[in-house]
Each structure stands twice: as structure tokens, then as C-alpha cells.
Length: 428
Image 1 (cartoon, one colour):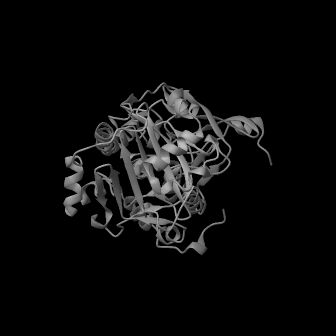
Image 2 (image 1 turned 120 degrees about the vertical axis):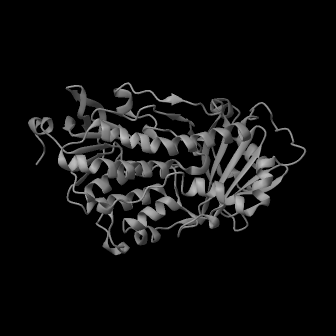
Image 3 (image 1 turned 180 degrees about the vertical axis):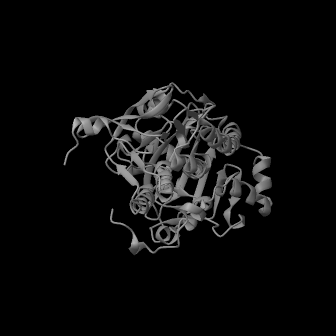
């Protein structure tokens, strides 16, 4: 039976999660396993969007095991990467060896994000207190008595309000909720943007993850099995100028940068095959106001360097669940509880962003679209890369920072379940 206008005004739950990405769905699953009534609102009708982060790191793989979802995840089609290499004019350097990180998992799994989200959604749907509403866009917040009391939303039936004890913004770097409350993150700037596209793979192509850098440009090549996911790094704000040069010039740039791709760049028929990612690096000073908490990209937009954004966001969700569940169940949640989440999770966000900023300055300081072709580099490979490449034990340091993170979170006791096989999943 469709909701009446009165029904839509009187809707209530304990927690509203805005955004059905990795952080939002993971938080919904954890809260529901604790018995908290939680509603996740996702504005899209599905999860099928290209060029979202698809890297699942050892910290998240361990968490999935603790949640009893390891076997389900292992059944998903995936590629595994145990290290990364950087190609410069001066040579090749291995910059991280995941085989040396502590713990059971010593690789990064490359899984389409929609498959990962489907898995978390299906597990959450097994809990009676979980609700996911697709095609439901949050357009504002409800405030009363000096605190956030819920959200205003728009779906296929019109507009409505959903009241809650807590609203959690997981709606990304352009968060509607954050903007509605006037919360402005501190911007750190980023020297580049990324153009994402696909090219077919050959058996002779390098496996895993390879990054190629020259003055003026960079290319990230991610082995996705049947195809390579490619990220072309350009100076910030030069996307329009590059597109004006035409797709043929773009193909030439890719083939010159990595000649093994020359036999297939013609697969890029036009710039319709290329998606632009506007790289941002920012962080909220305070992640909460009374009744509302921001996590994931809504609290700290990350650079694509290291592919850590998804995994940090998921760890935010774990910390948020562990800290807020007692107050949500007892009806005693306070701003002090929300502040604890921010204090705990701001430390790894700050450390990772600091490392990313250092990489930006070191590798991308010479990006200049005017250098066409880029000038050749002479001399030796930069000292940090030489040291990492020549000392295998040192390769564990960046691998651990990326794969596990500075402060990994583990599943709280209330969310842990025995392992379950894929055929026990709830229907999608």
C-alpha cells in the first residue's frame, strides 16, 4: 500500500545513513547486526557506475572474514595484486611488496565495486532491522532544538521526511548533507586530475598494478583480467584543453608514454570513452554536529594515490558502529560519542593525506601539459625509489601503510558471524 502524506511525515527510524557506497552499506550492516533500526538512502537505482574505486585491501579482507563474509567475497570474480611498480625514464622500481605485510592477506583484491556492494547489501538484508531505499535522494536535513533530527528526501512518490536519532553522512566528497549544514572542509589542493578509460589486455601485458611517470604526464595501468583500467594523470584543470586537442592527440600521448599500448589505443573512439575524476584532497576539522556524523569522503576526500579511499571509509564505518551502538540502543547517544569517532579516525586520515601530499609534491611537481612531448629525464632514479627498490624489507613499509593502514579497525563482537558460503546469500 502506498504511503499517505501523513505516513511520509511521521516516518521514523533510529539511524539514517545517507549514501549507499562502501561506508554507508558497511555501517548499515554493522548497525543492523547490533539490532539498531537503520535505513540507508541511496539516490541511484543501482551500483553500476564505472571507474569507482575497486581495490579491496588486506584490512578490509580481514574485516570480511571477521563478519563471516570471507567465503562469499572469495567467490566473486577478482584479480589479485601483491605489489606495485613505478616506471620512470631512468628505470623500473618496485615500490611496495604486499607479501611482506603482517596478517593472513598479502594482496589487494580488484573487484568491481558493484559486486562488493551487492555482497554487503545482501548480508545486511538478512537482518530484520535493516532497510535500503534506492532511488531516494536526500535534499536536506531536518533540524529542531539545536540538533539534526532527520532528513528530507525525494523519491519516485514525491518528497518526505525521515526522522532519526542519528544521521550519518556517507554521501561522498560533494556531500549534500554536509553542504546543507554549512560544513566546509579544509582544502589541501591536488596538482592533478585523472582521466579513466579501458583498453583491452594482452597476455604479454604487465600483471598487477604499474605506474608510468614522465615530466608532464603519468599513467596508471590496473590489470582487470580481460581489460586494463587506465588512469591518465594530467595537471589540475587541463581536461578541457586536452579534449580540445582531439582524441587522436590523446591516443598519441598514451602510446608514447607506454608503447605496449600503441596497438590498441584506437579502441578509444572518442572522449565519450574517457571519464574525468576531479581529484580533491580535503578534511573536515570537526566531523559532527549534534545529531549528525560525517565519515568517509564526506569527512575526508582522499587522493587516488594508493587506492586507500574505500578502505579508510570502511574503517570509519566500523569505528562509528562500535562507538555509537550502545547509545543508539539505549537512546542515550550524545555529541560526545560522535566526537569520539572523529578523534579516533582523524589520525589515520591525517597520516594518509600527509603521505599523499608528499607523493604529489615529489612525483607531480613537474606536470606541465605544455611539454609535448615531455622532456627526457637524465641522471639517476630519485633516491627514495632507489632505496625502496634495493631494500626488499623496506618495501613492506609503504605496502603496510596502504594495505592495512595506520589504525586498522576490527569487527565488534556484536557484528561477528561464522563463515557462510555464497549459496546462503539473501536474494538480491
